[in-house]
Amino acid sequence: MTAPLFDTDVVIIGAGPVGLFAVFELGLLDLKCHLVDILDRPGGQCAELYPEKPIYDIPGWPEISAQGLVDQLMQQIKPFEPEFHFGEMVTELERTAEGGFRVRTDAGTTIKAKVVVIAAGGGSFQPKRPPIPGIEAYEGTSVFYSVRRMEDFRDHDLLIVGGGDSALDWTLNLQPIAKNLTLVHRRPEFRAAPDSVNKMFALQEKHELTFQQGQVTGLKGEGGQLEAATVKTPDGEVEVACTRMLPFFGLTMKLGPVADWGLNLHENLIPVDTEKFQTSEAGIFAIGDINTYPGKLKLILSGFHEGALMAQAAKRHISPDQRIVFQYTTSSSSLQKKLGVI
Image 1 (cartoon, helix red, strand yellow):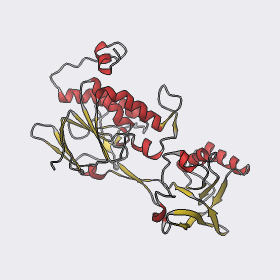
Image 2: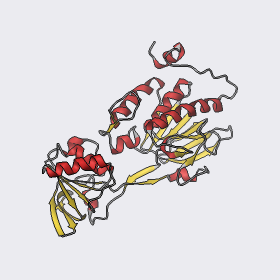
Image 3: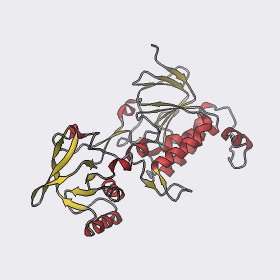
């Protein structure tokens, strides 16, 4: 069977919010996009790690869930008919004789493009596994490293382990629906937002959850189903009944193959200019959390801004002799036709 071969204007590596919005900005300029993502669906870390978690700093949305934002972006780019390659990782990137690029994935897909946009967030990422003997036997059945559906934890004896924002946020969000909830952290000081910590201790005072200082050293259960965890505390070992466990020990970020593409790197990030968001290689751009420049803020809205400027530069790179007329979607009938609103 012949491996798939595609030809397009732009390959976007990463289908998180910033990569998705780049499709919109590029589409307004008549540039067709293919997106490659190692995950099995759009949304990047938003969809993978905290789909039901609210986001409060998206302009025009006082509050929107991470998955809700992804859904809205997918709706917004629908008129431009992007093509997605999910469950694939880009392994090779090379220039063609014509000056464009040839991208290959680990699934054998080959895509020829005039421009490459790296919107891969922090690179490939995976949760850090806590050093608990035998935890692998419970993973995916009763031990989870992210919350995709809150309902999956309803009426369970829930054990959350960690002291950062993720651990405290999910403690507060899941406490109302859990049968019982115990939060374990190795010390009484937390790295999370002070307001979240105060709310957690307030719930403890009302006996609506349990905070246990210590470290999980063992798990009990059969067939992948948790029954209890052993916690080493300052006063000795205790057993905590639990049917679900959420360890939040952070993420391991790796650039993966991006590190081998000949780009200038700085501390595993890709330096770019703030006019074009172009890398050290002409025609290769980087937007979102994977890039770095003076004053960089790792915010989704910053990535949206970067995508807009990148799209203009990508268009000039692809069509250097074409005069690009800047237009507003509110007043341009040609843009409104592209969007299907007239």
